[in-house]
Length: 205
Image (cartoon, rainbow, N blue to C red; front, top):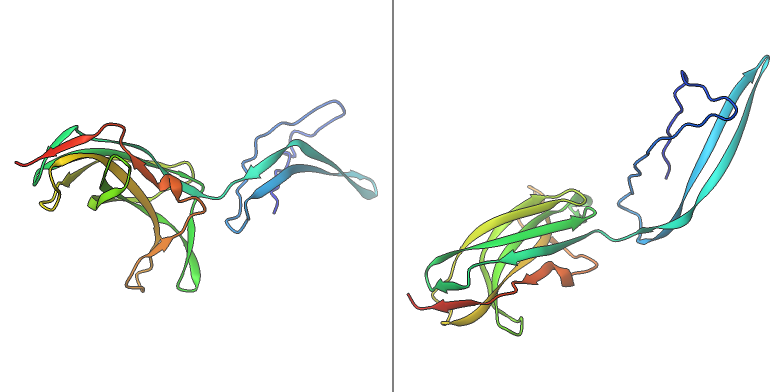
């Protein structure tokens, strides 16, 4: 892959002059995670009657560019330290993306959208109740974040006790012609779950 940035013809470059610019590189989603060297090639053309003359100069960066797999992760989750069975509680949660996840569906590919489930965990970080509630975080660009205060209800099936609130994010691809959404499996799923630092004590109403 490559990108071109022409030097404005109006400037012209004479011996000793320079032209500096920033060029953002878009990485193809088909690229495999690896390390690369960025190369810049200067291609010049001049006219000396009656002929055109061309030459080029190549410079390779000293440091490698490390291309990482796209990833999503939960970066924050917190909530109240007390709650009652049957009552509603607010849970603050934030999801962040690195790169854009893509999934295969219906013979093609589509960018992923994200959901966040709010769950209850025991003190050993095992799930007690899979989903108190969920929210749609939508489509997120590279480096995008989505924060929300999600209101969830503590169901009657939860026994009184001390728990931890947690959030789990999941990437999906969706096609209106397909009845079900499809989960996107990430290279690193371990950071999709985050448990709050402080416990919540749940009591009977």
